[in-house]
Image (cartoon, rainbow, N blue to C red; front, side, top):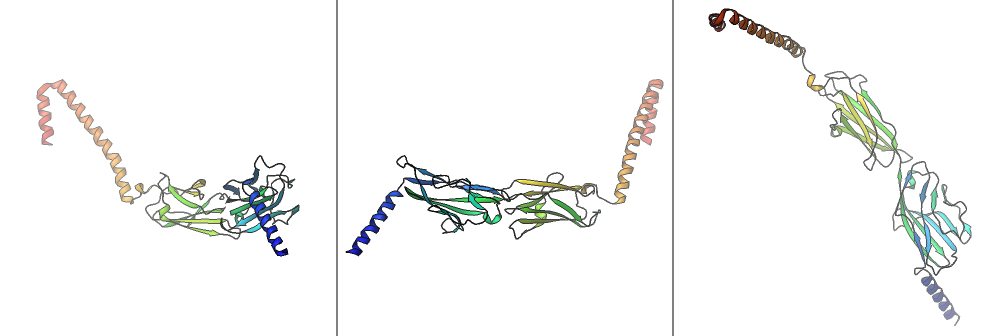
Length: 298
């Protein structure tokens, strides 16, 4: 008989819990949050109750860091019937004066790191029911100002060289892209390497090979974040004339001669024509015929 009484008691408690969690309490949070590396991040979580619930009291709060939405996770901040569990370093309630009557149980991360990126669950048990919500934190870190240099240090015509572009301290992984002075992209001719440091931030390095005879006066390296937004750019001047002006010394001499001869020929033709007009005007058609014959003989 005693065992039957215990079974009835357990069944009654389960029924009461089922009724209490049947819609009187709802936990609401944003589906996605953005946090910036080294700054504070807020994960909102608020308990909503129906009009039937008067003066609710929170018994349990459990914030957990998950590896996936279905994961059980690890506790980072907990409250259990009047007692605040020892939170993990850097995690606390957003309201410093929070107590069990405060339905805003939002989580504050005081110094956001790359390791904080991922899924979180907010579970709340009140005297009127319980509920849980899952949210995500996407950590971002801005890439540093670009550094661009060449090997060799001084680029000379008709010799191969390499431009190197570097940026670090960003997250998630970004890209480095190359453009010439006419905004034609040369990223396909470059090689980029991305390495991740112990703190999770990325170091980006890109090498662009410049072939002899096809080097432009200016190249621009730009760093783009994971979302495709440009964060910085740097223009490097090679001090090399455009490829269209490259050529031998003989070709340059021919161009100079052409520039001198053509104007002289034009001026000479004009002078001869004016002289003929003057002679025709003074001596008549006979002179015109004579000059024409002389010109044809020449």
